[in-house]
Length: 344
Image (spheres, rainbow, N blue to C red):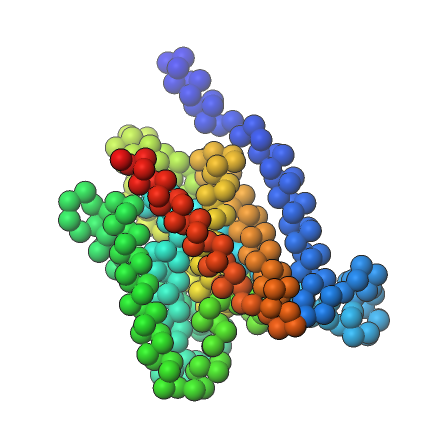
C-alpha cells in the first residue's frame, strides 16, 4: 500500500524542470513573434515595428507591412500548435514515438479531399475546406491503421510507418493527377501543396479557432487516460479506462487538429514529430504536461521555419513546408535508426 501511494503521488508531481522549460518556451515564443513581424522581403527596424504595432494612426509603408504580418504570425502560431498537439495524440494512440500526421499520411488524405472539392465541387470557402479535410483525414487514418494492423503482431510502429508512407505516396500521386489538367486548381494551390502560412488572414484565423480549441480540449481531456494506456491495455483497463473509446476520442482530436491546419495551410510535415519528441526528451512522458508544451513547441518550430524560409528565399520566400521537410527528414531517419537498434 505504501509503495502504491508513493507511486501515485509521484504521478501527480509536476516535472521538476517544467516551470523553467515553460518560461524558456514563452520567451522563445515572444522572440519568434517579433522576428516574424520584423523579417521578410523587407526588414523592419525596431522603431518602425513598434510604430506599426502601437500607433494605428501612422500609415507609413513599414507600419502597414507590420500590420499585414500580424495575421500571418498568429496563423503560423495556431497551425504549429495544432500540429504539435496532433503529433502528441497520434504518438500516444499508436504507441509509436515517431508517429506524425505527415508520416501516417493523414495530412495527405486531407489534402486530397480538399483538391477533390475544389476540382469537382467548385468549393472555395475555408470553412468548407476544413470539413472536406476532416473527412479525408479520418478515412486515411482508418485505412492506414487497418493496413498496419494486418498480419502477426498487430499494429506495430514499423508497420504503421510503412503503411502511412505507402498511403501518403499513393495519395500524393492522386493529388498531382487531379491537379495537372486543371490549371485553375494548380494556380490556386501550387504553393498550398507544399505547405505555406503566407495566405493566412483573419478570416482563416476565425475559421480555425473553434477547431483548434475543441481539438486541444479533447487532448487535455484524454491525457490522463492516455498516460494509463502507455502502461499497456491490460493495466489501463484495470485502472478503469475504456481503451477502445479512449483511442477513438483521442484519435479524432488528433485528426481534427491536423485536418484543420492542412485545410488552411497545406500539408506541412514533421512539426508534430519534432515538437512532441523534443518535449518528451526534456520533461518526460506525462501527457498532462507534454500536450500544452507540444503546442508551444510546435508554434515555435513552425514560426522559426517560416521566418527561415522568408530569409533564405528573399526577396521572395521559401514555403514553410519545404523548410520543415529539410529539417524533419534527417531527424526522422536518425530516430528510425535509433528505434531499430533498440529493437535489435
